[in-house]
Length: 117
Image (cartoon, rainbow, N blue to C red; front, side, top):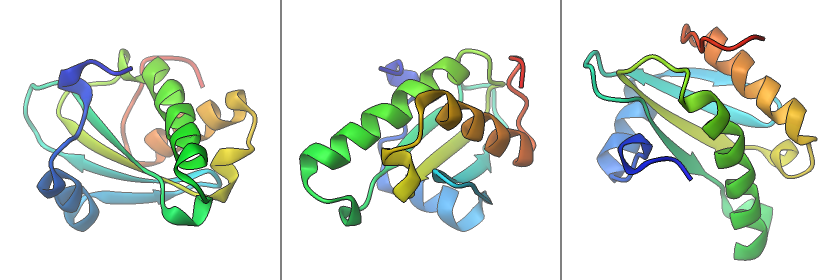
């Protein structure tokens, strides 16, 4: 689980990331990255639509995304709001490939993650 300071919770924060953030499309997810330009920790939110099926399946996909993002969060610079919107591949993609796609999406959005590629 991400620390409380690392989670997006307000609808307005999600909307700002959608409308003003930079969009990067990958196979498993779409990243919306909004640069807040402050020194607060980077916050992340996760969206899994109903097309995935039951709430059990949606929550499983959301847990996979959170677990992959948790490994990246500690090495990220401060001052960003990130929204990860799951795509169909997020449910079946091997975990290592999911992490690699997330790293690639962050790099394409101009966010460096201190870790290796």
